[in-house]
Length: 353
Image (cartoon, rainbow, N blue to C red; front, side):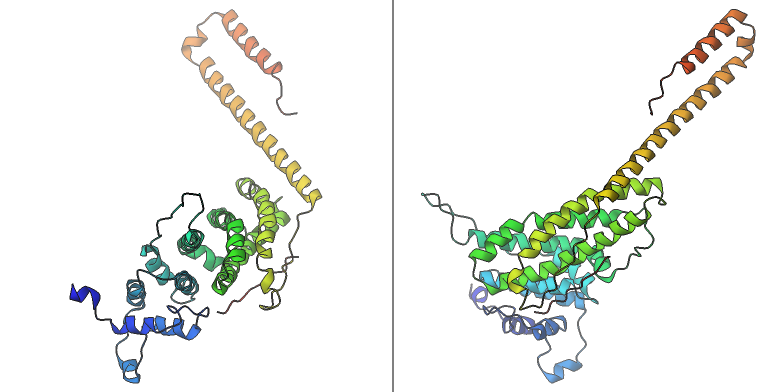
C-alpha cells in the first residue's frame, strides 16, 4: 500500500511534470515539446548517454501521463499530440504510438433531478471529440502528409482515388462538430480552446486545398480523361461544392484570430454554373455511349451464337421452312427493336504555439 501512494518517479516523469504540458497555464512551450522528443535530457552529462529510440520515448510519454487531469491539462496534452503528429521526421512513429493510447477516461455524466446537465459534461465531451479527431488524423497520417507536402502531382490525375475519398470523409467528420465547437468556444472561457481551433484549421485548410487542386484539374481535363476516372471524379464535384459551403462556416469560427494571428482570408473558388451544365451534358453522353456499346455487344453475341447454331449438321438436315421462319423471325425482331437511346490561389497556414 505504501508503494502505491509513494511510487518513485522516473527521470522522464519528473521532467514531464515540470513542463508547460502538465501545468494549468494556458501556454504551451515549443521548447518543452523539443525536449520531450529528446527524452528530456536534464543534465549536461546526460547528453552523452546513449539516446533511447524515439518510439520508446513516445511510449514512455503516454505511460507517464496522469490518470486524472484538469480540462486545461487534458487539452494541452492533446494539443501536444496534435503537434507531434505533424512532425516531419517522427510524425509517423508518433501516430503509431498515439493509436495505441486509449485517451483520457471520460467521467460518468450526471443529470440532476431538475434535468440540468453537470457543468463539466460538455468539457468532457469536447475532450473526447478532440481525441477522436486526432485518432482520425493519425489513421490518415499519409493523407495529411500528402496534402501538406503536395506529393500527388495534380497535373496527372490517377485512377487511385482512395486519397480523394479519404480527404472528403475526414472533412465531413470535422465539419459535423462545427456547431459544437462553436458552442464550446463561446461558453468555455479557456484560451487553449481557441489555440486548438487553430491547430484543427491548419489541417482542415490543407486537406480542402488538396481536394480543390484535384477537382479543378479535373474540370480542365474532363474531356480527355479515362471514362472510369471521369465518373469517379465527377461524383466528387457535388461533394466539393458542399464542402466549400461548410468550410466557410468553419473558417468563421476563427474570426477572433484574424488580426492577432495575421489570418489571410482564403480565396474560395466557385465552379461556374455553365461549366457544371457542360459537365452534366458530357456525363449523359458518356452514359448513352456506354449503353449503346453494351447493346451492340449483346447483339453481336446473339448473332454469333445464331450463326454457330445454323452451321451445325443437325440444323442442316432440318426442313427449309424452319430455317426460313427462324431467320425471318430474328430479322423481324431486329427491325422492330426500339432504340432506347434517343485561379487557384493556395494558402499555407503555419501555426506556432
